[in-house]
Amino acid sequence: MWPPPELRRTVALAVGILCLGCAGSLDVERARALLRAEDATGLPRLQRTPAADLPPPRTLRARSGMLRAVPLEWEPVLAGEVGGYLVERAPAGSASFRPLAAVGGRFQTVYVDRDPPPTSPVPGEAPAEESVEDTSAFVYRIRPFDRSGRLSERTSPTAEGRSAPPPAPPERLVAYSHLPRRVALSWSPSPEPHAAGYRVERSPSAGGPFDEIGRTGDRFATVFVDRGLGDLRLFHYRVRAVSAAGGVGPPGEPVRAVTKPEPLPVHGLEVEPVALGRIRIRFEPNVERDIAGYRVIRIRADGSRDTVAELPKDTTEVDDDAVAAGERLAYTAVAIDADGLESAPAPPVEVTATDYGIALRAVEGGVEIRVDPRIAAGGDELRVYRVGHLRSRRLGSATNGRFLDPGPHRPGRTLRYRVELVGPGGRSAPPSRVVSIRIPEHPPEAEARPQESAGPPPAPPVSAPAPPSEAPPGRSPDGAPPR
Image 1: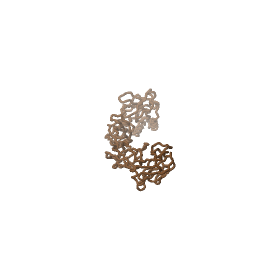
Image 2: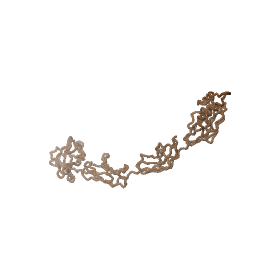
Image 3: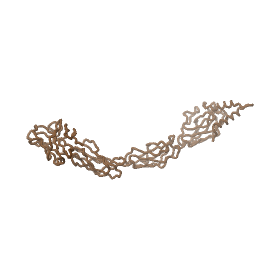
Image 4: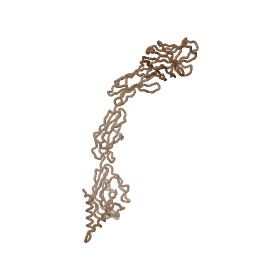
């Protein structure tokens, strides 16, 4: 070990006093003034000629294994007027030394090689430009100079120093598969004290290329979760240790992981109309053990989608009561597992909701309205409405599915009707579509055909919905049944 600086100064002071001693006494103040001059850290302009007659340091030590740095230490030169020291460096195995840095003062005998100064300390000479990186190796020597900047021709013995290599890859990397849209990784902490974190890399194949997907910022942060992945995706992962200086070590062996697949699509989807305004949907249960439930979806003619119901895992049948009479629909369903993953929708199944089967006929004495007797028998009352341009008028109730709107009705006039089935407790089924008939000129018993309600007469022979302006009792203004 080198003596501490205080001891060095004491020894140097004693040497200076002995060298400057007078015949009868010691000139202490003169010795102290000389030391103060030698302690000055200002650097003169260095030059090689004329050379200074100064001995070199007798020893030089370079410490290896440091993180992107090589510390140097040497003995001070006690003889002569030493103004400082020039540090010279060459690549390991080479004798091409270049000026690296200059330190001022006789007792400034340490230097840490990290990043070289931007310019050469010796004017006109090329500097040592290469920075110390991971696993760098250099040879060093020290050359003293006097207070006027004249360099000595003699140098210290050389010393070789090497910086630390990048940290080795961590061990025992484990990837956890079959997680929903993510992969969890864990590994053992690096045993190297200058490791400051880790870089995680991912590739779709074991041979790469690997891309960086994240970092951890601590030597003991050894868990990483790769999120936002797709279902049933295969990935390969590897981890590198990162030093406190930013050096990235070599990668470890890659490991493989697979994300969890989505559930299988719902199988055996069936739909059937079971009553006015009601369609039954059923399907087969999924085979996966972690199914949490199902979602049944209604698709209307305009392409809009609505959720009919969210079903638990043990329920595979549901009725849809929010359909209009005669409405054309399609249904699909998805399975949902315990992690929230959804299957692809089942192929849609189309269905037409049960209709009233309305038929209109102009007869002598008025307009006859007939409804499918099976539909009429399914409720307590079948109400008949005449639909006007501004409001709807309730005409009465049909008997056995038949009703007569008595005349006389003006020939050439278009009349529009709709019916509504009322069940127990006054609960109304969805109303029928609005159908229309044009009163013929001759004869009064001419058969009427269903016609479009929209548009001026004569109307085409197609029934179409037309919202009433005035709702009957128990109905909302848009004609929808109370829910």
